[in-house]
Length: 289
Image (tube, rainbow, N blue to C red; front, top):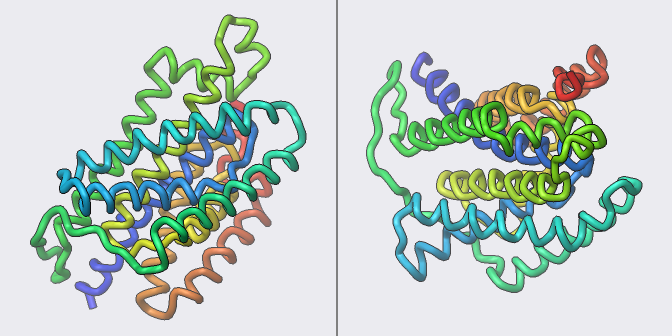
């Protein structure tokens, strides 16, 4: 029994970190642009397929493929922001909703046409594992968790210590004042959008290593990301991180002990319970402080 719970706990940590990358990317975009990117999961899907094709056609090393996927999706995110979302800045979110829905249809349909309906898989990048409290834990999961943690830490350092990161925080807190202080808000917008997209792509790469990839995988990623962001509070990176682990552990424990469908229901139940007591989410005010 101890081994089973250790296995579930490690799985929860791994999934929690990957959910965190997706949700933090979505939070970053909202915090800076005040735009909800409903097509965020499609960038997650694109990241997974980019990595798959690096392996299939180029045979690149795993982490080089992850880096290339992140760069490509970052660039694609910048183009999307400049062409589609920038003209909508300051307008009703209904406009961004319409654009996002169009993006979902275009990218998912394009994915089905390009990649087909065959379920794909990304080869393991490291073999073997170790035993923790009687449970066999694959080295792959340990490395993925460690890399995800480093990315989250790196993002925090970037936002806290670098000039661009501090400018992003300033724009998220008060864009008008930031603009008056000489910060190029348009530049910050596309950097934030591209960075959020790249984080989602990296999560897709690593999740695709653990699970199968299909062109429609972005829908579930979007749903999970919104559950986490709403639970943690719109615009709060800390809230997104904590919410990701809550949902990750719910998914791991309930899926193992019951079914994935019940885990999905319980995830939404957790969101509803938190919103009853904290309507703005766990840390809904943190971004404005």
